Structure formats: structure tokens, C-alpha cells
Amino acid sequence: MRILITGAAGFLGSHLVDRLLSEGYDVIGMDNFVTGSRENLVHLVGNKKFSFIRHDVSETIHLTTKLDAVMHFASPASPNPESPLGYPNLPVETLKAGSLGTFNTLDLAMKNQARFLFASTSEIYGDPLEHPQTESYWGHVNSVGPRSMYDEAKRFSEALIMAYHRTKNVDTRIVRIFNTYGPRMRLDDGRVVPNFIQQALRGEPLAIYGNGLQTRSFCYVDDLVDGIYRLLMSDEHQPMNIGNPTETSILDFAKTINRIIGNTSGLNYQTDKRLGNDPERRCPDISRARSVLGWEPRVDLEEGLKRTITFYKNKLGIS
Amino acid sequence: MRILITGAAGFLGSHLVDRLLSEGYDVIGMDNFVTGSRENLVHLVGNKKFSFIRHDVSETIHLTTKLDAVMHFASPASPNPESPLGYPNLPVETLKAGSLGTFNTLDLAMKNQARFLFASTSEIYGDPLEHPQTESYWGHVNSVGPRSMYDEAKRFSEALIMAYHRTKNVDTRIVRIFNTYGPRMRLDDGRVVPNFIQQALRGEPLAIYGNGLQTRSFCYVDDLVDGIYRLLMSDEHQPMNIGNPTETSILDFAKTINRIIGNTSGLNYQTDKRLGNDPERRCPDISRARSVLGWEPRVDLEEGLKRTITFYKNKLGIS
Image 1 (cartoon, chains in turn orange, blue):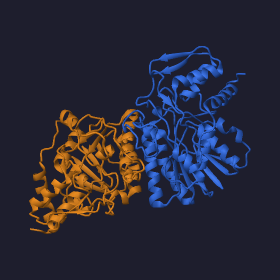
Image 2 (tube, rainbow over the protein chains, first blue to last red):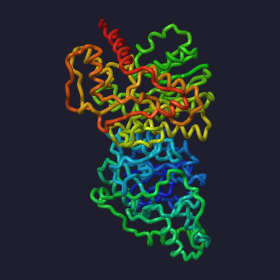
Image 3 (cartoon, chains in turn green, cyan):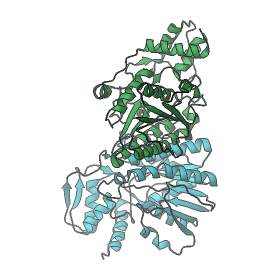
Image 4 (cartoon, rainbow over the protein chains, first blue to last red):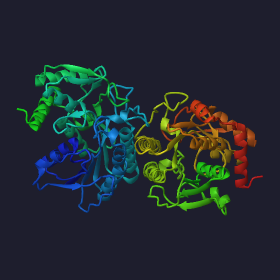
């Protein structure tokens, strides 16, 4: 069985590649390296089950190899407006990945009569008015707001995928991914986990934007990838939340990182530089993942952070 | 000044062509006739200010003529699942018109340093939780629901247009069009106005789906086109509602049509065949159109219906 993964050099994509290879599949990775890193795939050099194609998924994909599954994970994904890798600074690329990219990968799946799985996001719920979010919640999204290039591209993709499923009989799946962390998040992509860990490793106070009481539900990447793998193997066509339902405030999260690393510099409340329409709370209801996929997260925050910190220490050459 | 209008053979597009010609512009119409009709443009044969290109806007547009404005009006627009012209039966075409079509027309406007105006819709508000809807309302839309091919394509286009405006400096405008009626609505597109008028002209009872208490705000097409023309001439880049804020229940609307036509067969309550997620109420707040464009509707429902009924009588050869 051969699987194509777009965004294979990204944080999630590369972990997914590893999991699928470990399950015995042949994997073709695709990436244009706009936000993905070669480093994330370098350990696969020489692996005969893995091949790589440098390609922008917004351009038509010409592949003659027979595929059994197509997984579309290509997109900028950091909301940080201060990072050149944040989607606010790559708006047209983001909108193309979530429209042209979705057309191209769906067409490829259809041609191959292959399974299709799309990386959607909790951002399709926007700044939600219901907590926790079930898959039946329609969301609260500003179509012309500062996050719209990402949110609306993902929502558009969901609508497009359901159209292909309903009218062209494509065997589709949609995972709505909530906040995830772990090794290989880019240090420079401006998201909270690498930011906090870097600051703590440097012995600096951790920068808190806003009052720090906004909550997130952080899922360790291995758990997330396991949920996605189960969804791929299932026959579920409706969108599926995958994420960790344990809510943590940004403040508690920062304190935990400081404690694990032994950083005594504390916190530093700063002028809010977050992108507008930042949700105050976001937390998945994973009842459907539990019942349909038999999935729930297993790695707790403490354990996941330890593994992640070890990764960054190695990467930065800190003993 | 030369203006390209996509969807020029459609109900709104063709009225817009007429208005722009009457203002002295050169107009190029574009349509692929998936839902547009040649009939809507036949009166322009021989008009030297008008030319026509048969083209699917989802395909790259190669035009060497210099353009001063690009207006993107191409899309299926009827929600009726019983009509082959309804967008539920043209989901991929609808999603392409509102993504590839928007990319192509934006690129054309950018290349020409031309104004760009997009036909968005009140459907981006979905089944709204606020009444009336101001432009700042984010909407309530099901990204995987039965209307998602239309709603999400339009929302995606809005996000894309703002991205081009903000990062590529394209001189864009977005009109959110509420329910509109008038001459040239297709008899077979399944929308309520042509349906009611046809039934009344045949002396049949008017078919009411649901309890008929759901309200709509019907704007006469000449008023709508005037609002769009003013928006094109303005420097307003944020979305603008254009519609008639007078709410009418479907029931009252049906009774008015029966009265004007003199149809004594009354109403016929039928099993609800409407597309799911049909909004119970939708009504524009047009404060911004009033203050920014100096626009408000002038044709009342009675007068607008009389003109529309006259058109259908002529079309059907009824004296």
C-alpha cells in the first residue's frame, strides 16, 4: 500500500510519514519547503520505503505511480504575525494550499480510487461560542478577518471534500486537528510551545501576551498521529475532532515549562502582539473519536513536554 | 473605461451589463452558460459597446484588452435542490467559480491595475443568529452542510479578496447581495419568485414549503444594480450589504402575487422540499450603504412585482 502525504516536511506531516513507514507502508512525501524543513526528513535518507517529491501542491500533480491513499497536510499553520512563516504573512500561499491544493489532491485520489484524508483544524470553529466544540458546531469565523486566509481555506476545503464525497464518490476523511505540540515544531514559526521552551532554555522570563488566562488543549504529536492513523483506517466520512480535551491556561503551561527546565526567571507580561480574533478558549469534544475510533490521548502534558524539551536541547546542543 | 463582467448572461450580471452600457462604459461579458441564458443578452446584439466571450471563469483568462474594472458575478445561485440549475446539483462548478474563478479574475484585475468587485451574498451569514445582519456579523454557516458548496465558496472568495487587497494592493470591493427579484430570473431555476409567478399565471395554488412564516427581504433588481454601481464608483473595500431591509413573510409575498395577478386558487401547503439549513429570517442592515453610498432601495414590492409579472407575461405570451 502506497500513500502520498503533502506537507511531508512539516511538523505533523513528518511524524505521519514516520508512523506510516513503521506500519509498513510505502510513503511518498511532497513539500515545497515554504514552511516545511528538510531536517524533518533527513533521518529517512536511504529508506527504500520512502521517496520525496519537491512540488507545490497548488500546481497540478502529475504522478503515474499507483496510490492507495492521499493525505493532504500542506499548509502554513502558524498564526503568528511576527513570524515570516506565519500564515498572516503567507496569505495567498495559504489560500492556494487550501483550495487549489485540495482540488489537486482530491483529483489525484479520485483518479487512483484512493482514500483521501484532509488535515482540517479547530480553527474552522473560529472564536467558538460553545465549549467544548463538538463536530456538529458550525463555528464562529470572520470571513474577512486577520485569520481568514487560514480559517476560510480550511472551511472551503471541507465543503469541497464533502462535494467530492457526495457527488464523485471519493472515499474521503476530514480530521479537525486541535493544538498539537512535540518535537520538530519549528523554532522560528512563532507558536507558543517552541517560543516558551526556547525562552526557558535561555533562562529568560516567558513572554505572556494578554492575561495568560486564555486556555488551549495541547495534544502530544504521537497521540495526534495515532488518531489520524485510526481515522485513515476507518470508514468515517464526517469531520472528526482529534485533540486533547484537557484544558490548560497559557499561564499554567508556561509555569510547567519553567519548572521542568528549571528556569527561575518567571514570566513577563507583554503588550499583546497576538493576531486579532484569537480565541479565548478552544477545547475538543472527542466523544466521536472515542466511540468511532476507540481513540483518546495517552501522553500527559508533563511527559509530552519532557520529550519535547529533550528534542530542543539536542537540537540546540544543550546538555 | 472598459469593464469585464463574469456571469454576464445571468440574472444579475445581465442587468449590470445594461446599467453600465447606459452609463457609457464599454462592457465585455463573459459566461459559460451553465446557468446563464443567451436570451438575457440577445437585446445587445449589434451594440458596439458590448462584446461577449464564452469562457468558464474557472479556467485561466487570457485577455490582452486593457480593463478598468473586473466584476466577478459568475456562479450558480439557486439553492433549489429540485432544479438541475440549483447549486446543490452543481457543487463542484459552484466551488470552482468561487475559488479558481476568484483567483483568475483577481489576477486579471491586478495585471490591469483595475478595480475589482465581487458578488458575495447574504448566504455568508448562513442561518443568522442576529437580526438584521450588519456587515460586522460573522455568520453561522455549516462548512459541511447541504449549502456549503455555495456559502463556503463565497466566504473563501471574501477572504481571498481581502488578501489580495491587503498584500497585493488590488483595488477591491465586495457586495453582499440579499434576495433579489425581477425580470430575467430563470423560470426553471427553482427560486421562489419565478415559481410563485408561474403558478399564479397558470391559475394554480402557490406551493408553500414549511409554514410560510420564514421571512425574506426582496430587493428589486434595478435597486440592487444601482447599489452595486455606487459601490464600484466608491473607494469602499470592506464588504457592503446591498438589499431591501423590508421583511416580508413568504406567505404575504405569495398573497401579494396572487392579488396582483388575480389568481383565486390560493395557497397549497406542501411537504417541505427546501434545502436543509434554510434560514428562517434574513434581513440586511443597510446603514453603511445609506451613509457610505447614499443608497437605499426605491422600488416597493408592489411596483417591483408588477414589473416582474409583466416581464413573465410577455415571455410566456400571456396578454
